[in-house]
Every structure is written in C-alpha cells, then in structure tokens.
Length: 492
Image: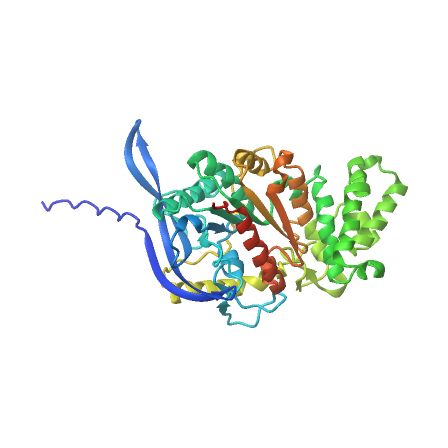
C-alpha cells in the first residue's frame, strides 16, 4: 500500500515590510525621511496545562512609520503613535489629512475636486517635529487575524487596547525607542483608545508617555447617547446646533450679525442654566415655562417652535441634521455640519447619508490605495478597510449596565505620571463629538488642581476632521507642534 502523506503544515505568518527613502519640504525646510510600511505579526505566549509552549501568532497589524533621517540622538527625537476611531476605522484620516508628509488635495473648505483624486506634499506635516507611526487596528486597513483565529476576538474595547498596546511595545522595542519622548494621537473613538492606552501602557508595560493628543474627543459616552432618561446630550449638543444654524444663516438677524464665539457664549449659558433646569424638572415644568424654553430653543437652533414642541424640548442629532434645512430640500453633515446633502425626499425622519463623510470617503480611499503600492512599495490584494462596520457589533462587555467611560483612566494616568500632558482639538461644526460635551467631560475629570494645567484645548471653525479645512490645518500644525515641544523634557 502507498504511504499515507501527512498534510503540509501551514506556513507561519511572517512580518512583511517595505522600506523606502523620501524627501519633502515641511515647515520651510527640506528633510529626508525613511518610510517603513507593512505588517507586524502579533503573538501571544501559549500555555497548556500550566506549561509554556512558545508564542502563537494571533494577528498581522498593518502600519506606516515615518522616521526623520540624520538624527544623531534618537533619545531627543519624539515618537508619535497615531490611530483613528470608528470603531472600525483605519488610520488613513490622520495619516493623509493632518500628520503625514502627503495629504489629499481638497479645496480650502474641505470639498473634494471631481475624481480622479491625488495627493500633494503636506507642508503642514508634523514630521519635522516628531517621528510618526500610523497603526491600523485589527479588522481595519490591511490588519487581519491570522488563519484559524476567531475574527471577532479583538473587536471589543479591552482586546483592542491590548493589541494596539502590544504593537506599540513591540515597535518601540525593535526600533530601540524606549528612551525617546513618546506621544499618542487619536481621533474620535481613537481618543477613547488613547485614554485607555494611557493607563494600560503605564500599568502593564511601564511605558510612561509625555503627551496625548485627542482630536474630536469622546471619553464619556453618556454625553452622546440620546436615550430615554439621559438628558445630557440634549444640553451638550445645543451649542453645536447653534453653530450649524449660524453657519447656514438660519438664526435671527441679531444673532447672525454677531461673531460665532459671541453667540456660543450666550447659548452655553442658556444650556447650562435655564435649559438644563427645565429638562431636569421634567413633567413639573409649567406650561408657561415650557413656552419660554421653546422660544429660546427656536431662536438658538433655527427650528420652528412647532417642531420643538413635538420633540418635547429634546432635539436629537439625527433629527436635527434632517430638519434644519428641510425647507430647502437639504440635509447637513454629522461629521461636519458645514456640508449639505440631498435625500430622495424631504419628509424623512433622518438623512440617508452623511454628506460630510461622502465628501472624504472617495478621495482618501483612492489616494491611500495608490500611495501604498506606488510610492511605499507594499503590495496586498486584500481590500484596504477604510471604515468598516465594526462599530455595529463592537463589544463593551467591560461596561455592562453603564456607559463607556475612560475619563477616569486618563485621570489616574495623569495622577500617576504628572508629566503627562493632554491636548484636545475641537471642531465647532462637529456633531459626532461636540466640543461642549468634551468640555463637560474634562470639567468633571476630577484632577487635582495642581494638574489642571496639564490639559490644553483648541477650537477650529470646521468639523470632526477639522483639518480638511485648510485654515484649520494650518492652525492645527502650529498648535500640535507647540504642544509637543512644551511636553518635551527640558535638557540641561
């Protein structure tokens, strides 16, 4: 009888890296830099019956790392790890919109040209100030679980932090950057991840950071969950409703003639005062008092009194983006409420799509796919997952029967490491993570008064991805560079 052949053992996953050299003019100076692009294999120590059995590959994580050439002492050169949110978003937005040496070409307001799209040199890149590593968490970009592993294993709050934290540890070790100043920058859910990592990296790996940059922050989810019994979002979204109505000229003439910041000061006082009190009183609010609140809400939102009465004084974000310009047959964006969209009909409850996401989805997808293959010389036939639907099934089991809250993690991390500085960037037209909700979270952080100066905030007249607006991009470069330099250790 012929011998039985054993099935061939599947090849073990290997790191796949491409290294290329480049030059760019950033901040008026020409610099040379090296790009390392590809996947690192994340492994876990395998244990069976109490005995170690080596390391088991679990996932391949895609990243793009930019390091400035001709740096004599890496201990003086900052290293910044960057990621976006979702959950389910790749790092493309911060990569090709704000930080990297290339950026997507848009007009000055952030609207795209007709396709095809292209990249241009980003003179506002942060590469002149810090080395940059863009991380795609598992299930985004080209990052995947290895064959045989459960795909959803890392698609939850804690496992996500652990896997991104493991990548940061591995990259830092292999590139001998433990004694470099280290920073994180996250956007949207990436700020949730960054705050979680601030504690995880310290307590699990003993990695203390110099600074964290939070772009369009959400750390305390009760501020953005429009659910019965939770009145916070109605109060905290109101100033952004006003900013949106001001931008689209839907406010009364006396408000339209004032600068935006002056109008917002007035609305914030109302939101925290009369409006908050009215919502807290619920059914005990008298009919006459309710009419007064309705009048002011109509004044500050551009919506009709009749509509506000039907909402019972509680305007949810998805209703607002449909209702504000309903008479014009237009919707406004959630990520950036400066943008307008067109639905099939004008009678719906919510918009069909977010026009501000539609404006960036095509340009960022096309240019990333071209850039990685053509210039960075990394090839993969997998689809690059720009923004997947992981947020729909993301596990928050650690927060059962409560709202997700990583603000406390950040507070503890700063208390343990009083040198940790935090920068928070806010867009006035951001209806995904409104600036007033972020202020509320940080005002309730509970930091010791001696640590209050560790937090700094900046504001931009754009939305969630405020850097698509060219003037905001210019200002962000200045703000972020100043923050990193101030958070660096002083050298004798």
